[in-house]
Image (cartoon, rainbow, N blue to C red; front, side, top):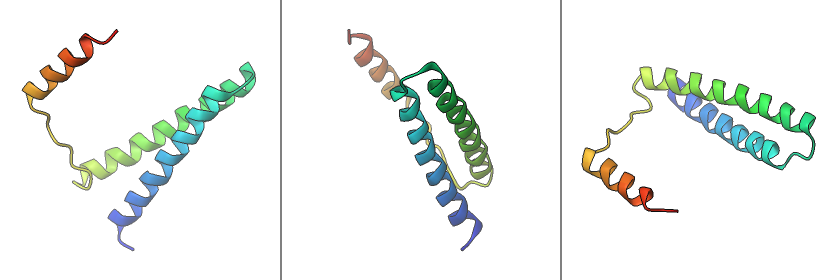
Length: 82
């Protein structure tokens, strides 16, 4: 398995953990449980960012630049939502 494939799989796994920790935080029934899940979520988000940064630096996670017109349209669309 090459590095790119391994990093892509790792990023997917960490994103899944972020999802689990977020739901644990949202659904927690006590402040202590909420704090524990939130701490774990923050750690997972930091790890996800580190993996993404490494992949992006190697060109393995290219980002597309959005057209200004599409940004403006999205802003207008959601500005009118109450």
